[in-house]
Length: 470
Ligand code: ADP
Ligand code: GLC
Image 1 (cartoon, rainbow, N blue to C red):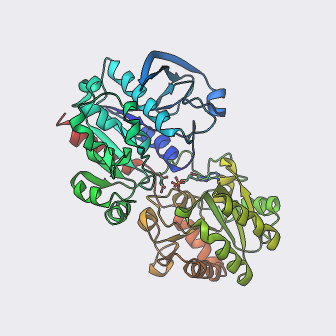
Image 2: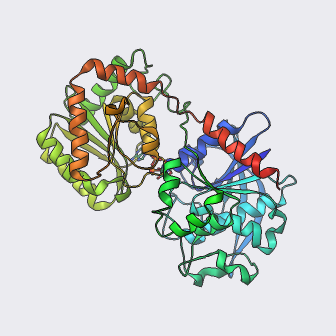
Image 3: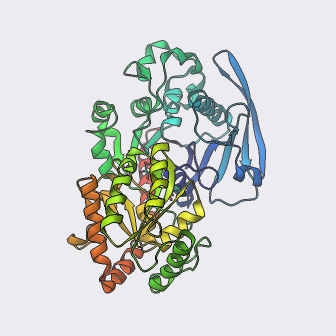
């Protein structure tokens, strides 16, 4: 069975967030036995693409309204990612040093057309086309309704919603960018008088998945305007919890951390990384170290950080270290706190993959007070590195963290306010004073199995259930 994943991001080639981690790992875990799983993504201009070799395997021309663009399909050479990687090279639109921009409607429609044009001319069609997030939301519509892709009509499509907050909508004025289709089908593209790729994918894909069971339930009542659509399509929707790539995220093998460690020697191993972090960022390593790693956006609760951190640093004997970027006002606030609480707080505003690994390893606690968290990978990485998560009880966080008071290993709050988050930090600070409990908890969480094995199999079962009807 041949599966092709279509995505805007894929680790290690281009990563903005967890979408890349998932698309860079899931195919690797699916590629066993009778399953061949591949990925196609845009060819961006970044360090990875500059440092690796690619071979052109197909050339084509695509039309976007009145403009036409030449494109190539490239294949990654001399590198074993665990799956075959194809890239869509459209120099004028996709070969940029960023993944997302203002011009995304045109960029990602061109990506989708080029990917389908190439798939269509292959001798062997895929058995399943698996699309991820709104950047690939028009594919299932095009496969079922666009005149030129009729041959793909019977190929089952699966669509995974990684985050329903982002839907990629654009005005009907841009309809000419979409390859021709019978106009009677235009309703499938529309939601609230706009063309909405996420809504289109939910309507047209054979199956829709989300990245955790709880998020699937939450979408029925809160989906940034798509609630009624989710409810009407609920029969074909299922929540499958993401896994983590335990080959990339393994403190016993991780070259990015200061000292490798397993669950047996986690205290000493974590201590080396904590000392490094505290020296690097001028913090006191005697105190419990709380970290945040992620996008500084409202979804992650970032607008509450200034008040929460201020209150926590004023009232508790702790250190806080933040790694992230996003909302400019929040970035300013996060920098401002460094002068208010020297030696207790620091922030690295930006993106740094290696530093994130060092923080998962060296921290005592990971903060994730997200308002929306479809799955969340950070809490699973932190568990694997023996770092105790402090999370809001929603989405994938609810599915992966159990509170210490219920015999679990983390701290959950249901009131995601300054007070609610502060109380969790306070509980965690008290817990830190019992070193034997901390040690025991670290050992327990490092042994929780969140690898992709089980979830990758759930996707395969889903593909098989569709394939018998194609
Ligand atoms: P989301 O995709 O919503 O941002 P996830 O928890 O699914 O959230 O995944 C976030 C991923 O991005 C994780 O791999 C996390 O370590 C990484 N990440 C986020 N921000 C940064 C940053 N500033 N520097 C390094 N890695 C980051
Ligand atoms: C999205 C979600 C995040 C999830 C990730 C991978 O970015 O915000 O919760 O973990 O996708 O599925």
